[in-house]
Length: 308
Image (cartoon, rainbow, N blue to C red; front, side, top):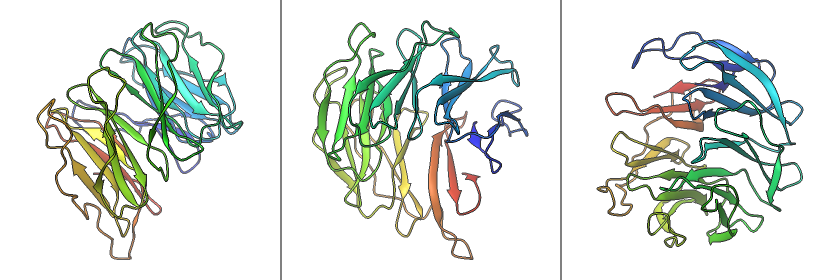
């Protein structure tokens, strides 16, 4: 786990035993500018990427696999970020990091080779984006980048079949209020989710590795923030979001694999108001599926952090 602590430093606690609790961990970098985003090398070593106080992209990485506590960095990768990056490992095992620059354009930085400590220079791949990118993976391993455009529609850019370039930029429509979320379901088709007009919307790739996408479907009304999506141990998606009034709610996907997205009714008040009227401030992340197939939901009510 990585997070920016109250002193503005990059903190990294980790499980002390499998399926067990977390130790105190350690600080990996002082005085960072944005929230850290995790990545994974092809050999299984974790890394964390973040915007520095100089607005450049920085990273730290584990020196040896399973060498808990043995980290290198921080080291700068260049660029000038306006928000938080998105990270993915491509089909060739290279980490690729995407970010919106202060110039409003979409940039990518990638490893020269899998597990390499050498990185290429930042490269501009899209002009004039409206929000921070998110990145998904197709069944064949091609990355696909999604972002809110300056027209507030959802746009996407898939990798080419050789995994080295980028195909045609195109719009998926919709009217986004914030940044989207993307996840891959059990049948390996990406699905995207966004907050628009106060409601939750979803669309999905119509065939595995295809270029066509379904029409937008509204699956929840009256939500108060950007969705976060995770997957349970069976590959079913589970969407978490702000309900109203700012309580955690979620929509689990109840489909069998390959049968299309179908969601049960919205489950409200998983994070009820506290005795002092404390309300949910942010859904941070969903993940960390463990042996009992339960996921961890990391939340931020006003003034503190909490995991469910």
